[in-house]
Image 1: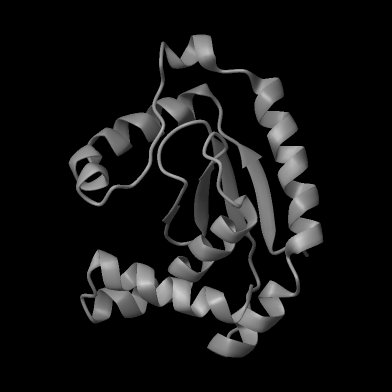
Image 2: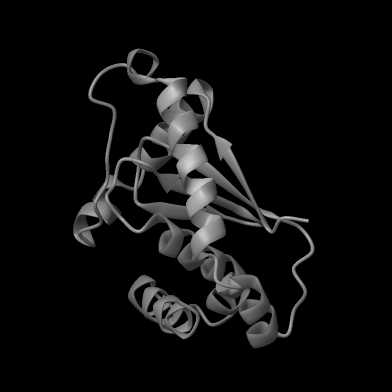
Length: 153
């Protein structure tokens, strides 16, 4: 069973995402987090073929660059991952974000290494209970996530 499933946000999901992210604009700006937003109406910008092309490219790239990531993560955390992480493809927001229990959103517009971004967000999901338990702030949460990711690139 695949450990990651790739999905395309539909127009309604994009609208919901943009509305929810608007609440965090000040946070993004204060932490210098790059974002993209609709330039016009989402319905006018939405092109399902562009999303599908990106999804196909991302799926192929994941297969090439996954590099036994889940074997390494399962060993490191002493867990067995039985359900796939859902990777939603968006045109808006930050480079990547996550929602418990297993949902990741990747912004196809930003010029990041999307595979590293997916791995980064998976690590976030795995350590989120620890982060909450110890009330770790944003900067240190990112540092911890990146330190773990550096072990498995």
